[in-house]
Structures are given as structure tokens and as C-alpha cells.
Length: 259
Image (cartoon, rainbow, N blue to C red; front, side, top):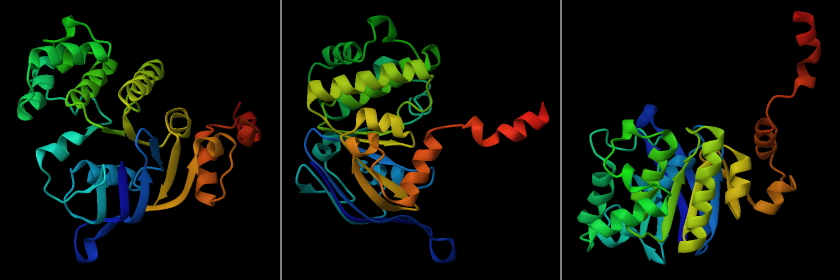
């Protein structure tokens, strides 16, 4: 469903040039959930931005559903792939109600019976009709992200790109949104790419993953290998140790000295 071959993305020129993504290649099967993990600045969000069509200065080959895509895409290819961003408040227009947020993409793509699509879109993400005419500031963080997911789904895409979709939410709300995304993926047979720095989230959501560092893929694993800690690259090992969080035993003597 998704093929990325020798993808490179550069920003700037000359001495200010930044090689954000360097010769990245991977493929995602229909219905598969694929993770991109790495620290901030590793290039993972840039990769999904190129796949989504948000960036036009890239080199290499991207194909969606077997069809190569260019820097200018027809509406049909735009509808095929949709994206959910990290910050649900920043990705929603502050002066647009939920109704307008969901209606606008349907109108652009000239879909019939927009009224029914909006009602169904809200229901599919667990929001009631009372949320339909509210503005983003009248919604909680979790509700805003559900609206963003509904906006992505209203065009019935086959591919959903998720860029840290729960990192701005409280832990309890994160679990609700992740469970929602898992259910939607199964019900709709969606192909997903999820970007995250959280290995636990990736292990829960994804079948396979690629570890990125400094714009390159350094290791590709399946979820079973991740759970078994069966990885070999030093950067992956370092990323896993960082994800385990604070180890009091490493600083025990120093802490006791300050007490």
C-alpha cells in the first residue's frame, strides 16, 4: 500500500543546507500498521510529511496503492491518504466549529450528503451531537483530537498517517485515543504509519517499525522483536534505555548525599 524508495529531503542551500532525511526506504503492506521511532529531529515527521503531500521538495520515489505520486497530486490521491497531527489545538482552526471542520473536506471533494457524513463522523470517534457546533477552545484536548481524527476519516481514506497523535494528551486520555485508533484500523482495514518517540506506544499499535537517527533508518524490527528487546543497533539500545525512564539506583548515592 505504501512504498518509499531512496527518499531524501533537504532544507536550505549551501552552508545552511540541512539533510533532514537521507535515502530512506521501506514498504507497508495493506492493512499493516508501521511505526517510525526516534528522538526529536531524527526525520520521522519529515518522512510522513512527504508521504502526505505536505512537502514538495523531496527526492526519490513514493507510491501509494501501487501508483507513484508526484509533487502535485490530483484530488483522488489526496483523498487516499490523510493525516492526524500532534497538536490537536494547533491543527484545528480556532474560528471553525466542529461542523465546519468536518464539512469542509467533504465539500472540497464534492461528497454527497455531507450532513449524514458529519453525524456519522462524530459518532465514529465517540462524540455526541452536542459537540457539533462547538469551537476548539470549548473542547477538551482529547475531544479536539477526536475531531481531528474524524476530519481525517470523513473522506474514507485507505491510509492514515499519525504524527505523535497522543503525545500532547494526558496519560488516561492517550489510552482512550490509542484504543479508538486500533478499533478504527480494524473496522476500516486502514493502513497506518505512526510516528512516535514512545516505544511502548509503537509496540502496542504497530506490527513493524523502523528506527530513525539523523535522517536515516538504522534498524527495522517487528513488534515481537521490540517486546523481546531483540535489537542490535547501539542507537536502538540507547533509545530503549531512555524509554525505560528514571532509574533511582543509578543516582542513589548522590540523592542520599543531598538528604
